[in-house]
Length: 96
Image (cartoon, rainbow, N blue to C red; front, top):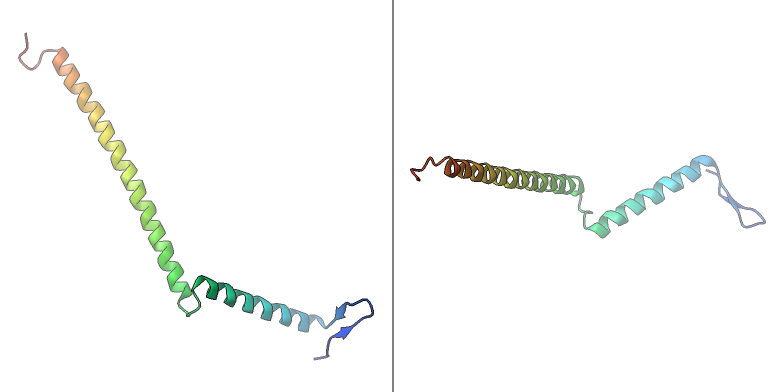
């Protein structure tokens, strides 16, 4: 591996494979720092993220189910009110 050479204008020239190795090393170190900053550096990051995604999906399912239940209860209430109103109007409860 040839050492990097500096040109007169402050630019550094190095072989492409050495440059790519340098970039890969920097990317890995950056990723490790980000995971450490997020508290996911202990090797369990993949499992933790899967669990967080599962928890988020469960929350979305619960929210969707809650809205469906609210809509069903409201629809049932409206229909019951209409039936009760029709029954009163038709005097089905022994009214005069």
